[in-house]
Image 1 (tube, rainbow, N blue to C red):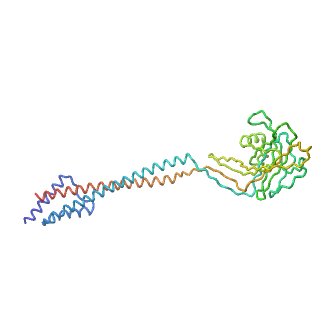
Image 2: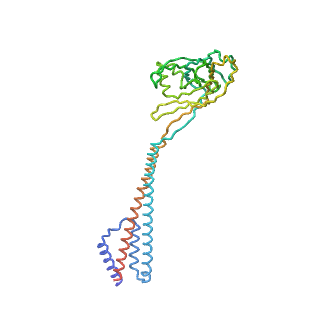
Image 3: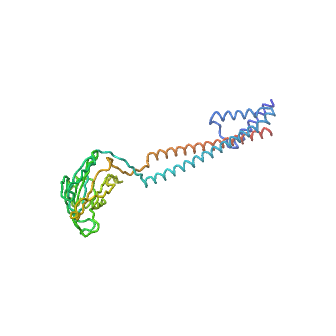
Length: 353
């Protein structure tokens, strides 16, 4: 009877203590009910040895749980810091890639090129012959220095120099080689009478399509634009200059395309076997040939993909959300354990009293 009364008075004191601490009714989960049941049973046990041994064990478990919760919160804070750094680095890399696009180079193989236009500025020199040859075979010269066959498509045009607007330029436009598989080439021969100059050379420039020149309604304006856009080169007298051309197409950021010629030049000395009376005329020889059947295409590509960046940011924000959720649950768990510890301690004090 005494034990029942003690148990009843203990329960009344525990309810008053719970009301004083502001502890709500425990209806969250089955785990909390089990813990309260174990606390109630342990308070009723009369064995003094059990009462002596249980507090240190329970206290050590509570410390371990608290330490484990603090470690979890620290890990979650580290994850949040790493996630924030990844977000910052991703946005920074995206901005840098937008400012610095990557140059993409590809090669397109063709069997036949569009015939390029060769604009020659011979000045006082005269065209002796012009022929197309195949398979890189140039037969020996017949009657060098004398007029020969002209089997090339040519056209003469006069226009004002676009840079000075005063000098009249005389251009000889020649249709270039087309069949790259058969190694088609164009061989031209000029001669120039004796002049007072110490050095003699003929200027030339290349443009991408001879057909565009023929179809142009204003050929003068067409040649002025070509001279403003393309570089000019020279070949000198007394040598055979071999020009191997390659074509480069560049796509600009606005979608427009520009064409540029790159060339490799080799020069071979010409052995002049003419008589001394005929050597007063300076001879010029030039060969135009395609270097290879590949057209080099250059395009600026922005490697920054907005969709991949959005997916990465979504993943990072999801990690941040889960980390915040876990940290919130850990804090609630620590508060709950603290309240249970205070409740148990109050019960033990009441029981001792």
